[in-house]
Length: 444
Image (cartoon, rainbow, N blue to C red; front, top):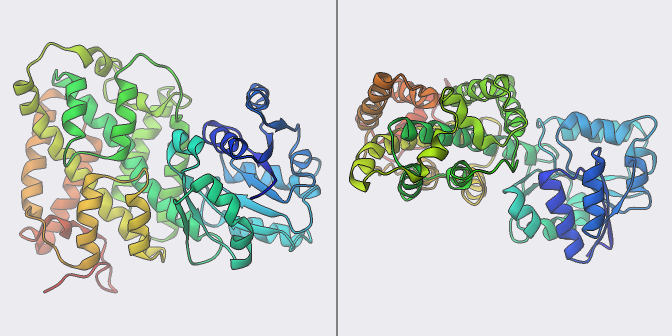
């Protein structure tokens, strides 16, 4: 077990990760640009430093959990206070921040140019939320040279437990997996607001809506995690909207770089941008529902105790289930298609996402069919089109926006236009097939 660790970046996730290390007997020196956070960290048993170079002095292990790749570059290579100025010879640096896939190879290049080829570097983005960060059970996607992974293994296991995955492909491969995971995380966060706003707009008891929608095809990890925050008067920022905005920007940039269309990601990015434009960027992303209900942004909260009957609510919620299932299935196909496009091993990718915050009922149920080629879903593409059309027509009467549902419907319609209407619903994945042939197999 590492005796001492330097930890740079004590935000919502980083604070939990660093204090978890303290609980496990590691001496942790922390750094953050926000002084009150440092004071809280000291109260939790950590030590503090005022610059990155002071933080890493004499430390064999260094973890970066700052918000962006640009912040890592600054903290590492600033001419006056950069960590590189005091990095111990042979130190192991673990990059846990989410950034574009090219940023970790770039850090390696810059270290080498500074004459620091002795530094072991690991690409190790994380997923799982603040509770798992504090419990040491984050999903960590580690990639790099075998020697670096060996050095970092014990530190990574303290933060991940049994949720540590080694991703083949060298520096940047872990970040590619995180990028694909964030396709689903971002779409599901946005779809949670779209669905709950729709339920509220129809006058449904929103607490009942949560219980019904989480129990079947509409379920996603993000839905189960975010909706409880909508149902209580609580302004705590568990995950600021700006974070998923940043991550979705990485995803769409990655798609453009690969020449690969990301229909739902692009629609999600626009909804998220609307949230930032409305002043919600620094607020918890559960507040995104206000973009869908601009005249009544607290309607979901107000209807948590609405006097409605289960029978009338469940009838209305049926059309919400239909759009959520359709969006989540199309999102699963979009994410897995991107993963294959950027060279990731699809079975490992599925296993990682199924155990992380990007999971949904449709992802877990339909992705194995995609990977095996055994398309056994009882619904056809045309069945999904019919169901989603009913939901979207109802929303149209109410003048309620269904940005993601409308986009997903078009994807299923594209699949139908390609002659796949009578095929099982997973055939929507064929929309992303290129001239080189299908991305996924199909048994005869």
